[in-house]
Image (cartoon, rainbow, N blue to C red):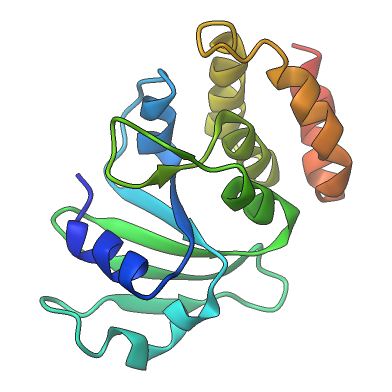
Length: 172
């Protein structure tokens, strides 16, 4: 489901990235439907149309985030397979990249369970709440019994909304 042209380009350009979203959830034992592959980076070069000038196939659609948008922007590849390369902002995106791990299931780094939870806390949707609870329920099977404590140690670095979301979820 990952287009290796994209991951190869990111590697060649030395752009740190990791798989997030539904496919990353699957890498950690949480299966749910997803129609696309989502990759996260903090490198703003991806929003420059010139960066994609040699891309073979349909040109990606570049959308820059507004000043107050939690995302710096998105580069969407129509596919197949459909892929979104997301320019992250903030502590959750930074921590997701810092804690990314190599996966046997995918040919690239994957956001760690901690990184995924932090990203999902910032997103605050009902699906994100379900994903967080599933990852926490899977912590023992993933040999990460301290996952909830790890989240607690980072949550104060997140936005106020994410902290409130965590308070609600951690009481379930």
